[in-house]
Image (cartoon, rainbow, N blue to C red):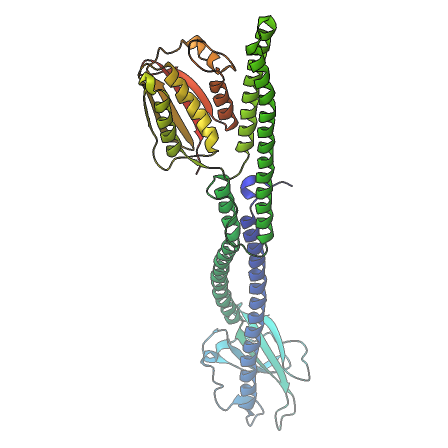
Length: 449
């Protein structure tokens, strides 16, 4: 059975399992201790009754008429208090001959038959409906013709009260012990799972680009897992590196024949040469486009890739100002320090550079670029003071090879590549009106932690 996600936790499982065992152990232990103490209390109470019975026998003598009498008190003042719960009685058979003052005019419920070997214990109802613990013994006194029955009874509620007090103390003591054990368990489990939290943090550091491999020492139980993850990361990087090499080799292998065909078509004339020229140009665009996509797709799957934004923005600003120095285009770009893009530098240069370059191509005198962070995203905003673009034509600028004005240099492929790379990084590019009067391009990309 699959547990809900919030309950599918090692911490919760360990704590609940141990808490159940601790609870069961404390309950069973409490019952056992309570039973042991109750048995101890009863044996202690029986011992007191035995001492009182022996004292009663020892201090009993016969008077001149052969009736038993006490020569002294037997050391329990409650025998003199009416219905105190403590009683003694001397009888022959069922006929009482002497009794304690506490019995008043009542008699103890003696047993019908006694053991001949020693004292006999029983729980009986007392004269005032008390629950009595009764000890009886039959003794032959010196010079007596008959055997006398001696009985001493004590209030059994004293045992019950003592056991109840013990159970109360035992209950809150075990409760405190249980809370202490549960607290120790929580600390132990939290400490024991700490390496897993450190491994998670190490994996997050790799994923966000703050580390290339899992770093730190781990316990021997999970060290093989960290080693295997590092091997997997290295293998993934090696596979992607080989893929990039193959893509680069393919690019060179295709571009050389295309260059030869283009040159031959330029030298020759006629309709065939024009057709070859157009087709090789289209092929070159397709090759550049799909090779850029393949390289970017590989880069998005590399763990630990991270690029600082500010240096890229500043480098591109200086480069484009030099490129368009003859048109006196002023490029203003700024990015706060500390922002990082979760991807490769060359992809960021491709996307941001194409957008700024396109703005410079259409601008009259000025291009501005700003960067800001929004939650876990980075937003690049590029504005120009050019003629702008009608709303019905803004989608077309991202189509491969589309050129809305042939007088502007370029192949028309840069914006399409920029959009495709942004989508591979789960980003987006939108165009809208610029407050400078021209066009605004907004590029949104994932930020690195």
